[in-house]
Length: 167
Image 1: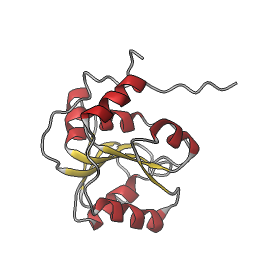
Image 2: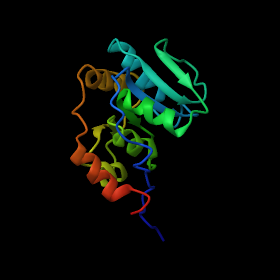
Image 3: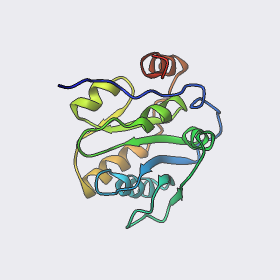
Image 4: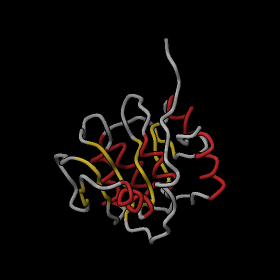
């Protein structure tokens, strides 16, 4: 038996605060083997930008990464607002709550092009092939070389209609 049910996002906490964009991409997590964390950092570095990471120390960190841990929801929301992109790049499918939190704060999600991610985030994320290493860094660096399509108020409202805790 399988139930396809999303997590919820709190639109009151995760909302636009409209600071300037300081970070190319925000990554989260504690395991660089299950998620494309380092690849995002390297691609941001190649695009002459900086990345912010919420979570544990990951080996082979790029020099342009600021790592934080134990941040409040309010600080996390601000960091999303300051980021152009938010990573939802987990190998093997999952449901990436940072994709929704970041989107509600104006960061454009990047996800692997897999059925689960397409089902939930089709109208909202930039999709990339599920590849590894240098191939993924090349793809992400091309994406990071341009600003993302802005998240509109209408798009945010649509996301909250589908994914809010109330729903």
